[in-house]
Each structure stands twice: as structure tokens, then as C-alpha cells.
Length: 127
Image (cartoon, rainbow, N blue to C red; front, side, top):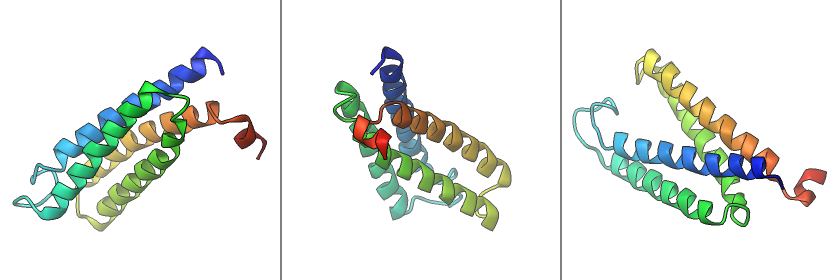
């Protein structure tokens, strides 16, 4: 593994962790979630996003040994992107916010996918 591949992995951990912490905070702001007051699912989402961010920072302590964390993170980011697009299409959030958030999701997803592809084990690369 090259040093450049390790950099991609570490950048992926930190970009996704920072995005998770941002989501954790934003999920607690009712106006951001297009509701008048705090609702229970917002708190659940915030707790999960914060916890996932912490997990990514822990993974960065041993980046290669914990590179498996990137795969479920790709799934999580993809599903968050699907939720944003769905909310935008249904008119639950303004289209401008859906497009802007989708762009951020695409960037984070791209970084995660590149990091995963560059750091697959030899067995994974053969399949």
C-alpha cells in the first residue's frame, strides 16, 4: 500500500466524520428539518450521526486495520442522499436545499468510494 492510498483513507474518515457531526447538529434544528418544533426522530438521527462520526475518528487511529468501516459508511451516505432526493422530489424541502445537499453527499460519497477502491485487500481486488 502506498502512502497516497493511506492519505485517501484518512481523508475519507475525517471528511465523513465532519459531515456526520454537521448532520448531528443540523438534525437538532427544527427550522432546518422543516418542522416547527423538535420531534423525537430528529434526536435519534442526531445520536446516530454523532456516534458514526466518533466511530470514523476511532477507525482513523488504525486506518488499514479498520478500513472495513468505509463500506458501511458508503451505504449510510448513499441512503442519506436518497432521503434528500426523495424529500426534494416530494416537496418536503426546498429544491435548492435538496440540490445543494445532494452535491455535498456526492462529494463525500466520491471520496469514500475512491478511498475504498485504493485500499482494498488483495483478495477483494481479485473478485
